[in-house]
Length: 114
Length: 112
Image (cartoon, rainbow over all chains, first blue to last red; front, side, top):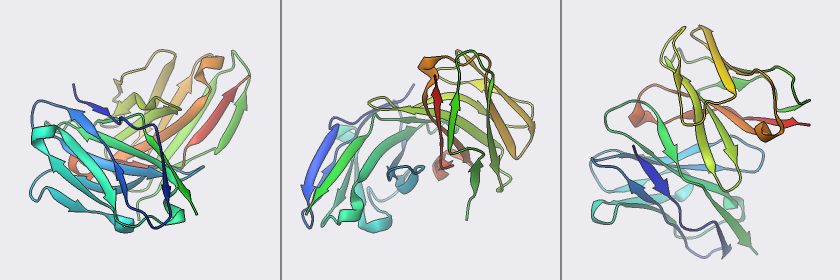
């Protein structure tokens, strides 16, 4: 079964600074990988996804993520953070056997200071 | 736009009550899921369904059951609510694994 680890529970970043959120997965084959964002009181919104091709993927809201097979990682980045990026971020992995289920990490809460 | 509607945003119930959480989708997707979200634990899969009248257990099915009588509706049932079922419950749909999941806004359930 697949699993995900998000090592950072909470990150504080200044507005305008860069942001990187870490995600490590465990799965025997090439996984499907996703990043979701959850603003306070809201459901989860898909930021970006990877399942094949270019290992650097672009998403919405100016986010990007890079798949590194050798490190079993799928880290999320944003060059310049805006106050509206304060939220909780979840990394998720799905099996390429296409059983539709996703396994989620525990989440990283991002605080943006002025 | 994908629309996944959960019937209640906030719900307060008493211990021992039978609780129904409803989820309705407008995308004609076969696959529907119920997750619960708890601080520090992320999202954990309770049950999912690939088709009408079909259900499969997820990682934490104990204390829950589900019903899917129509394709667009997937219900989560707490037969006898307990305080440890106080949580945020999220319904999701999926077309295929590579498309990811589309979530409803969630139901924050408090069991007193």
